[in-house]
Image 1 (cartoon, one colour):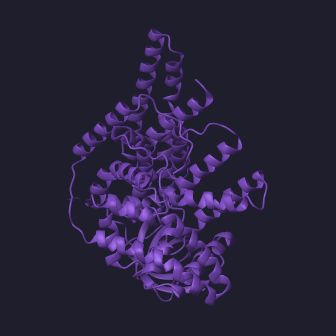
Image 2: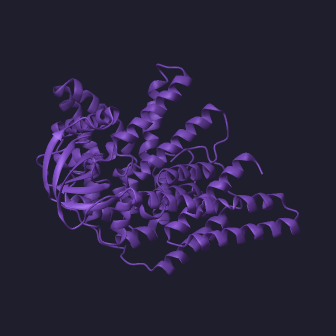
Image 3: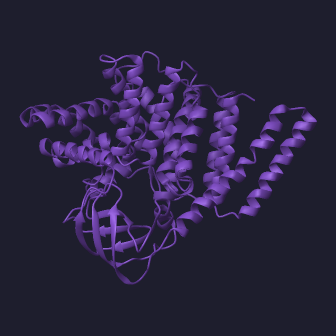
Length: 484
């Protein structure tokens, strides 16, 4: 086996081990299953004289490594936890993430001695706290109720919730200075949008450029959900691709190819940190970095390997994202749909995207359709809603999103220099934003062709049919050279 095939298989088996452990299978069962798989590969390799099977026999033991890694991280988190639940206590802690704002503040707080661990603190919007603030709190720490929300919080290392405690600011500067600067830059950019644009359009622009959704009204969130456009503000690979291409293009006028590579990676890393490092944007950034590295090394870029490497790195950082992060799951399924399902649909429908118009509606249709079909069961299972009108709404919006993003970043830059000039420039940006928000609200108001429930067995059958469809239209998987 070639080295990249060995790396791919080892990462896949490791991920299977993490998945098995996150599904609460006992470590003994996982070990027995891995050994049994290794024996079967050995027997197959012996009788078929297949060296590849011998390699797979050894690599399959990485299932045990993955499970051990998951259980070890889980036990370590619980061992380091020192909290008193259901009792009013006084404690201090540092805000370790950029606060989530909206109807209330949500702070992820790392406790200080004599206590240890992380809690989610819910407060009124004022007084406001920021990343790196040391605060004193008085209140009851409650255990999250068992279920998906508790698993989601555990994924973040949070094992307690404190609702509206007494909060007192002590001092600031306890976080990373780089992160503080990036979060400050993000907040200032959002304020520029708010000064020069109508509230709803400013919120939408902050969403597609910076992933900020705190200012969305409840009605607008529902409209985005029903129109299938929520992904636009989730900072997916689509947004990152636009950013990578734009940054590399601009830097190419001022720097060498080598310097452009490193500066682009640095800007991507800063952007990821500034936007909160969500699963979709981290995945897209890792893959974007792999694309840049492959181009620099003049090596063939394999999406198969890139997807697995991106997943492996994220799971290595936090093994709980695999089962308990919906954004992680939706992000990778949408990407797999675009990479493998889109060519199959294009071949099946005999659609040609050569010599596309500027708006590129055919390619947008194929991209949207493949991504939506790939995530459909999860959207229904998790959120109880999927609407077929999302296909048309995305076709009408995706064609102008890249231009809107580019103009949005320029508007933010101009706003730091001249308020008057930003007002003039903002008028042109507002035209695009008004069109996009109109499409979202219009299609969000249509309640036709909606799917609201789906059983897990039916979802499994759905994905089985989808895989057969892909295999039928692809006799072999192809290497692709563009990043989502």
